[in-house]
Amino acid sequence: MIGSTRTLRVWAYPEPADLRAGYDGLSALVSGKLGQDPLSGHLFLFTNRTRTRAKVLVWDGTGLCVYQKRLEQGRFALLWKVGRGSGVELTLSELTLFLEGSRALERVQLSPAAFVPRPLVPASPTR
Image (tube, rainbow, N blue to C red):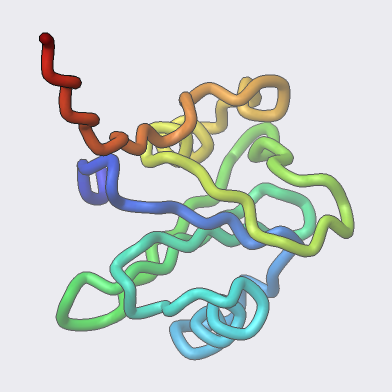
């Protein structure tokens, strides 16, 4: 699969996208609608209106790549409510399940929230 670290972020575009768009069209959606940098190295997921096709846009360090998939049966999961307006953040594991056609993502959040370590508090001196 694409990448393998937890620090890699995945953003799902919250509306059906015109998947005829190429690198420049998808990049414009990322920067204009999601407010993200398409050259950040993160992954950006787009689906068509019927959720039978998906594209993932990613910068690999030397250029933009577009990965696409068409389901022969069924539909991709609906990750957002209609008209929500903001992107949905996924983990790489959730993206993998999504691209395999899993519908479990519609019902429950599968991945825990990102862990942010807190600074250690020095122990108080004992008397």
